[in-house]
Length: 386
Ligand code: ADP
Ligand code: MG
Image 1 (tube, rainbow, N blue to C red):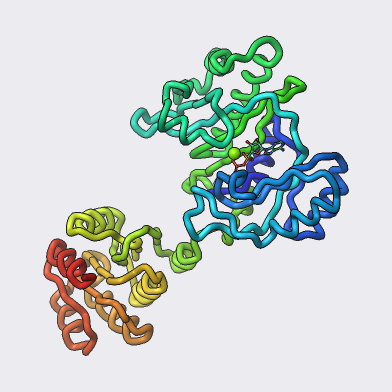
Image 2 (image 1 turned 90 degrees about the vertical axis):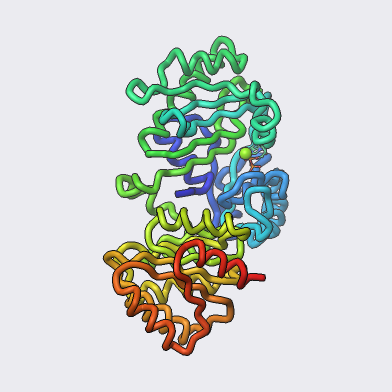
């Protein structure tokens, strides 16, 4: 799960990671109150969306008076922020975080990620912090300092110190940075984060080490242990179709292609997407109706797939084990009649009661393209697209 910067700050503070004080506002009235309460100049208004790259897109503004804060805040609320991380559709700003402006001496990068090939966490840091870290990683990966974290021992003090030394810190700053990194690791572990990114980590002119921009991702599988984080969920930031699907207990993932996929089981979803690509097209999504799909789930699933306007054809690929193919077929027929399917619909049903299902589809008077196996289905759906 993704959370906002101001929420990440709240979590970091619980483990004594030094952050910049601030107040979040949901509307212009609250913004005015926050500015008066902070009562220091200049202040920085930061658009809260689940995406980075806000600075360059106009989502970070320095203000020097209440009037200026209200004027810039007014412009920022409701604004559509398009950054390299939001995609073309952008994200609407609904919350603004108001923080003190910091006297920055230098910007760094610090992050902890899971290295899946090693099954271990890796601490990453760089002197090239600020807004361009992705570029650094791509063009000069040698500028990124890495410390692999032992799963049993955790980030050891000497490792934290070694990172700080490699970043060029000395004296008191070295001590502060070392403590900062250990606290960051504590936050990562205790909140079951799958990623922490501090970009920039700053050295201030006063000699302090601070997190100026914080991003935390939480492992969904561990959310049940963190009620306070569950409450931080901001559905407005999530894909509306994915939210709709989760209400019906469907796993739906939006992708960029044009073939909508309804499948049961993640393995079959992967195979289906592979074969669609292999046949020369791209999946628009995958929707997993799960093991015990009912007619109703199938109907909800089809409705969700069809409400994505990028979907130009649908491939239903269901293997009937616990879920019986005849039920799925009835679900498809009923849903298609109710919703009205305007794009080609290729259906491959195999397994329990597949023969009954084939009859149901054939007698349905609907324009359904039946397929006998996976490659037949993929070939037919790609052909139907063209
Ligand atoms: P994003 O990564 O989404 O662009 P950041 O919070 O990293 O947003 O802000 C971008 C840049 O704006 C930072 O690298 C920093 O130079 C500046 N900035 C952000 N917050 C502050 C602040 N409180 N004080 C001074 N400068 C800031
Ligand atoms: Mg940043």
